[in-house]
Amino acid sequence: MTAAAIEARGLGKDFGSIRALDHLDLEVRDAEFFGFLGPNGAGKTTTVHLLATLLAPSRGAARVAGHDVVRESLLVRRSIGLVFQETTLDRDLTVAENLRFAARLWNLPRRIAEPRIEHLLRQFGLLARRGDPMRTLSGGMRRALDIARGIVHEPRVLFLDEPTAGLDPRARRSLWELIQELRRSSGLTVFLTTHYVEEAEPCDRVAVLDRGRLVALGTPTELKRAAGVGSLEDVFLARTGHPLAEANAG
Amino acid sequence: MRAVYGIVVREFVRFLRQRGRVLASVARPFVWLIFAGAGFATVFAGAGAIDYRRYMAPGLVGMVVMFGALLASLSTVTDRDAGVLRMLLVAPVRRSTIALGKALGATLLGTVQAVVVALLLLPLVGLWPAPASLLLALAAVVVLSLALGALGLVLAASIRSLENFAGVMNFVVFPMLFLSGALYPVHRLDAALRLLAYLNPLAYGVDLLKHALLSAWAGAGFGGEMPVALDFLALAGFAAAGLLAAATLLAREGGVTRTAFRQGG
Image (cartoon, rainbow over all chains, first blue to last red):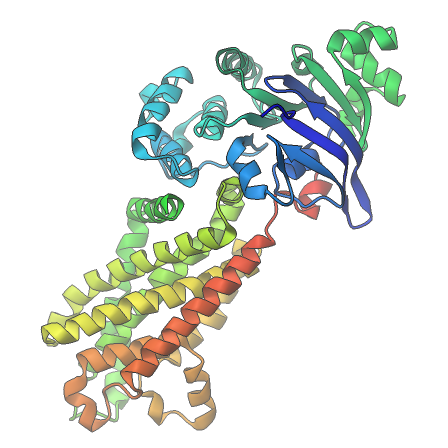
């Protein structure tokens, strides 16, 4: 497959009269670490859910891992991992049981699933907690388990929707290291949404979204040079006329 | 299908871990046997022909199935609240597969609970059915669990929150129980209520259980009232219709809803 990992053409979504996503043209390359930066309500989650086939687009089209998100939704879902903003883990199941449940949903035979789960638990520092109910984990560990759950079937594209939201600074940092490490070791395409500038900084390329519109796209260096400013924060300000922090607060 | 198996295993493991739920499901029919049994026995028209507690036994087994299967399916509402439903929706499986997995999970839970209760209840009321009758009873319990599990899924997919749960209990569970023939024969009801009873899946399940367990009292009018084949057919119909409706309703279930978007997605 030589197609781009993600390809959107004029993709848009309305909720009634609210235009959540206006018109998105986007191409994410294979193995790229792609950042989707914008304030709350910019349409980031809507975009992720459109690409993950959870929402039907109001207009336009998109292909993920070479498959059309409307006509080939099952094939798309087979090739992607998605970590939602809120946890999707079962509180009453143990750490290992949660991963086993996901492995079965993704149709992995036991002999493939078990060693992989073992490996993920070790990689994510959860081995000692494998038999504990998920509800006993700390916020950071839950997030790590959520990500492990999202890649147990070795997807081609991993969507991380605000993965560090709601975590304390220390948990954020260690989760962030985990994501970086995962990226280096797997060569996975990662599509990360965030409203934290510092999380967009290490991305290969960044798309800046505001009020359902793409306002900038490029490597962090390109974006800063084009806007003649020193930080991505200033890029957002230069492109939208209002600061990112203020948009986040509002 | 591995996904179906995964969903069924999860339902079962969760059930076993909720000690209170296991205990309540086993204890509930005995509470009814003692209290409702004592009360109804005094006004029961069949006194002399059959001991009222013995008459209640098939209905109580049906009641266990109803609570077991219906509550298992209604856990889908909790799944939605907890976010687990999203994991199911983003998995590469059809909505109908999710519905099937959930319904089969409910079938397993309903059946296991009914078997455990029956093993304690039947000797207690002096019912010692023949092996063939026990097989018929088991088949009745399985098919009834599936039908009620599917119905529970439809309810779960239609109600939005746990607050509506009490409404479901009051307007679905109790009418279903009272119009099932579990506590009194359906043929003694007046025509309008009898018609409602015929729309009630539990009535067909309880009827089958009476065929299996009370055949000795059929002559006195306390056995099954409808043909066995019709009971099975009706239950299969409820199961199929329920599964179809549940799969359709689940297909409408998306990732973000309008409300979620307004909250800032």
